[in-house]
Length: 223
Image 1 (tube, helix red, strand yellow):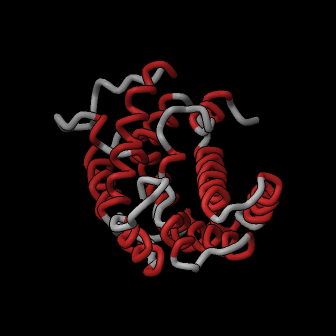
Image 2 (image 1 turned 45 degrees about the vertical axis):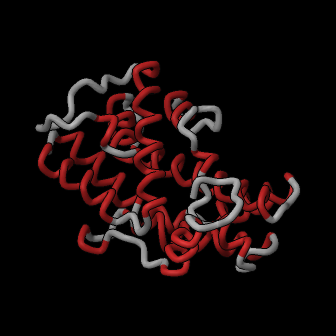
C-alpha cells in the first residue's frame, strides 16, 4: 500500500518548483521537434527510457542503499556523481534549486536534515536526489515505491509542460500520461541492473535543446 509520506513527496502541491522546469522541452516545441500529442509522447518516453532509467533511477537506488547501510563515502561519491552527469548548466541549476526547496520542506514532514554523512557540507546544497533519498530512508518508504512515484511525477510534469507550450487540452495531456505510464515498468526494473560506470543519459538532442533554452528570447520555464 502506498504511504501518505510517499504521496506527500510527489504531490504537485509540494513547493519544490518542479513545474517551473521543462528540461529543454520548451525549446524543442519552439524548434518544431515537439508539435503535437504524438511527438510529445515520444519525447517524454525517450526521456524516461533513455534518461531516467540510466541516470536518476540508478542514482536513487544506490543512494538509498548507501544511506540504509551507513555507507558515507559511497553516498558522498554519489552526490558528486549526481551533479556531474547533468549535461547543461540549466539542468544542474534545476537539481540544485529543487534540492534547496525540498530541504526547507523536509522538517515539516518529520525528516531531520541536521547531519550530513561524514562531511561538513550542508544537506541543502546536496541536490534534489540526495534529499529525496534521505526522506525515503527516514520515512520508511519502500525503494520500489519511491522509484514509481518519481517516474509518475516526472512524466506528469513533462507532459503538462508540453501541454502548456504546444498547447494541448487537459484531456489530451492526461491520455498521454496514462499511455506513457502503461509502458514504464521495464524502465524501472532495468534501472536496478545499470552498472555505476554506465550511469548517465546519452540523450544528445535533449542536451542540445536544454543548452539552447538559455538563449530563448521569451520563455515560460527556467530550463
